Image (cartoon, rainbow, N blue to C red; front, side):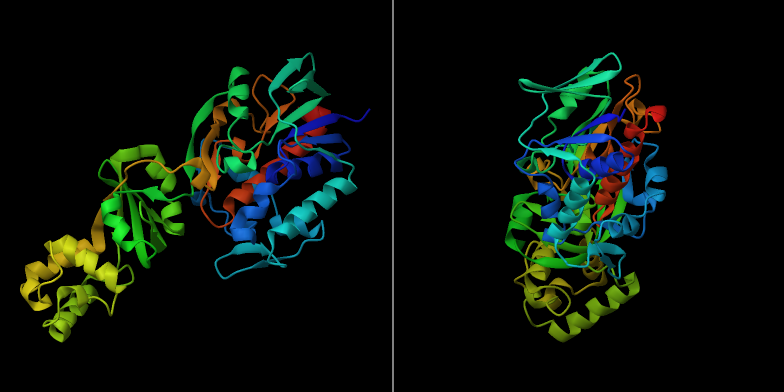
Length: 405
């Protein structure tokens, strides 16, 4: 008799799990709380869907799940999608995109394959309870109940709640005895002192950003930093945001606005600029090196004013060293945590200690957890979707095979 598998969540990991389970011969039903499956997939990569990355080094992943590396190393994103008629292209930084350039193509490929395999998609079905009954699992959706040999929780985390991923499954899983690492927003802006960044709203600048916790540098990232009226943003900031969320107001973000130059080169450039523009207000000094407004704000941060002549403010080597220290290491206080609505992924979720190497819930045979519901999250660049595809396929195969419970 075919095994009955229920997949809770019709997103990236859920559709992957449904496909894998159906390919193994299981009878599969996907329960999706939204009016349609895959809504969050359509939003990824600004609608282009950065669906993977060729560099799967574990330094790009975080969390407590000890099996994540092995699961992803055995997964081939290109092969997975090629098998369902979707072709990919890879950019110079190793990021994979659908050849069509649209996220809709990714969702179509997943939907078509699931439909071809006979997987049933039931939308507008929010799971409100899970109960183990003998060797079966009872999945409760309000007044409706489903019975299955195996249940796969692929309901996502708490990020992007408008897409239905608001963490509603975590309390249900916690009541079953699983440990939940408190969800935190990740890949999101980092709130800071509005008085500092508001004058720079909308400006982007290349920088090296460093996350500090308790005064110690925890991680560095290079890239484009964007200033908003209340926060720091940009991909390199996103990659530091989980640290900021973890440490809260005890964290700081440092910015080096001259990351491509050595200390000696910076000192030489500043000396030249003082000679060339010394008679002009210091606000004008750095406009050949940085966006004018950025240079003005940093000079003012260093000396309290940017209106005096540059030569007057920077008349000594000590003054020039001070300005360089500010340009290369000014720190911004973390003043809070971004909302889940601003976050691309969730840091936290079901702890690795609650899962077996098959991503089955310990002590609860037939219950599997995958995707963003697991305490595994990655940097920007397709890493999170790689985890979703890989973990979904992984648990789908186990859930469909009675001997691998």
